[in-house]
Image 1 (spheres, rainbow, N blue to C red):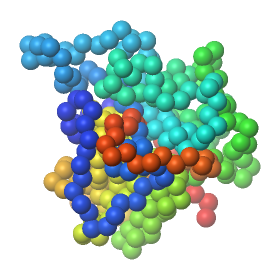
Image 2 (cartoon, rainbow, N blue to C red; image 1 turned 90 degrees about the horizontal axis):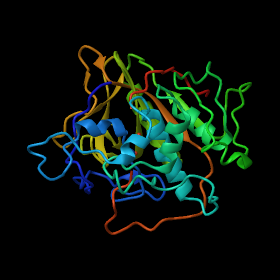
Image 3 (spheres, helix red, strand yellow; image 1 turned 135 degrees about the vertical axis):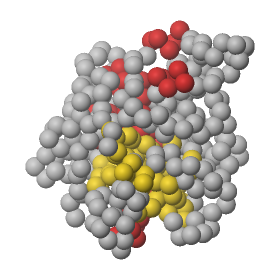
Image 4 (spheres, one colour; image 1 turned 120 degrees about the vertical axis):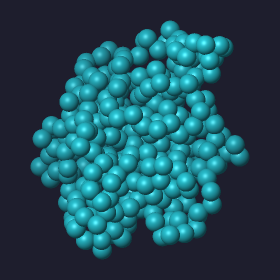
Length: 334
């Protein structure tokens, strides 16, 4: 698992972004100050400089009893990113049954540093600790079961549990059709190296379209050592004309939204770069074409509800998303 640079101190804090050249665009109910989620893996706790008495003499974080009730989740970034989007989607609904896991997990007060959602804990208790894809999580949440491995390969396996059943929204009928290789529940698009910089504008347009369509969006990054899933909430355009993405990440040792610029190498690889004197979270070397490449964008296309949440003047940072070892390129049918 690749270590990610910390983006801030351990406890909740609001991020304030420098003003860009255009107004940022977010999915519904999301702004820089709220509406988004940033679930963190519990295993990241070991490396956090958590605040506690005498931390300077005892650097090992003290873990509450609740920590040990949760499964190991070192490879569950896809579940974290998927749960961020599922909770955002459920926030738009006024018809969430009491039996559906919703909101912050019961362990939130004991473990605010990981800010886990009830949805995420349902996923980690129901799926084994392994690489996977957000589509598997979304489909299980809505319809139950696993999608065909030939299309959505995953090393994580669905494990029967009495506590969590999945299929919480099966009445909506948003079912994957293996004959047509299509689903009204999600869309995805895999970027591939074209060797032509003219594709930069086209691919940027695809990325923006997922947010413009109000699709809950996640991204897959891939390097020579593995893959990782993060959550995307919006975009902006900076003074240089670069597309800037608003992201949350399950592996960054912090709860907060951050920004990265989307760029393209001469070979045609898409990658994320730092902005406003901030380093790239997932480094890419455009001269040698090595490092973390943006390979796939995924969108939850389930119809939103009618609920609109007023933007808070000052909000608690929401929760959100891990090394996904199993990865398969897919090109959306055009």
